[in-house]
Amino acid sequence: MSGATAPLAVGIDIGGTKVAGGVVDPQGRVLVRTHGDTPADDVTRTRRVIVDVIRELSASHPVEAVGIGAAGWIDAARATVRYAPNLAWRDEPLRESVAAAVDLPVVVENDGNAAAWAEFRFGAGRGDGAPAVAGAMVLVTVGTGIGGGVVVDGALVRGAYGMAGELGHTRAVPDGLACGCGRRGCLEQYASGSALVRLARAGAARSPEDAAGLLALAGGDPHAITGPVVTTAARAGDKVAGEAFDEVGRWLGEGLADLVQILDPGMIVIGGGVAEAGELLLGPTRQAYTAALAERGRLPVAPVRSAMLGAVAGVVGAADLARPR
View 1 (tube, helix red, strand yellow):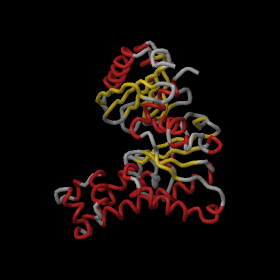
View 2 (cartoon, helix red, strand yellow):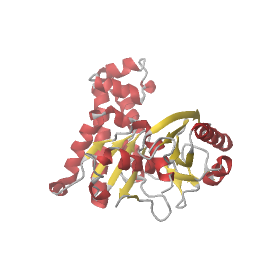
View 3 (tube, rainbow, N blue to C red):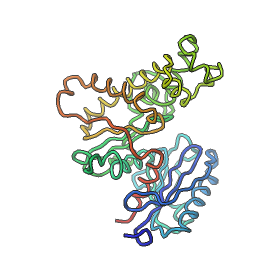
View 4 (cartoon, helix red, strand yellow):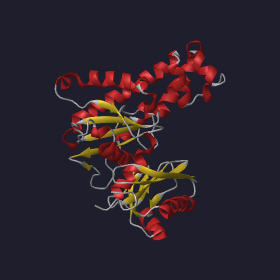
């Protein structure tokens, strides 16, 4: 089927700083991409940027639908953003407003769910050409926070109210660190990019002699340490940076072992910006995962794999979920 006649869809991935968009074909290939800046504190301007990106993409390709992936709690009808932690949306009727502006069918989905669907359909979940075992896969995205999505029997698990799959907000530590969701001790506070930076900064302040490489990259200021700085320093052998990855991996691996007990997926896929560090994160994660499984690990258990689609996963998944079938 040619690109001119295949049912094409636009996928939109909304982050705290950028609206990324692309035209996606039925094979999950992104034919063209564009983006705009996200004015996170202005609902009207954010909506205008989304509409502008869609219009730009649909002007050059015959698209039939639009899928929007947004970080936040999306209702069961895939229409309203109930709450977005990094944007000013509170009960925002996003599907209705965007559809009216672009005159196309629109689906709104949680960004973690969209990425999970993309990896299941077109990425790591395909494995050697077959879908993840029994059509069951969990994606965990490790970025500033922790997101993800769950696929069971070849379908997204969305729950009664559309808000299932918030893996980062399962409790890791009773009465632990305060989380932006309003709870305490969420896994996100211990196994995310934010946790990685916090651990590295604390380690550098406590033991500057063990963080010489880390501090050199940060200009000598522990508060200037960022996620990419930690990754670069860890790859160069910095002790404190390496220990920060070990700690984040330990928490993540233990969280994955809990998921196995509940969901018994055929595969666990790790994506997100922090996962781009590769074995710095995945090595300690797999080690902690195996140890935490205990006797359950003697039975068939989901392998932990790297995501394959990278930064385009949200765009691809949102588009595919919106495409008419």
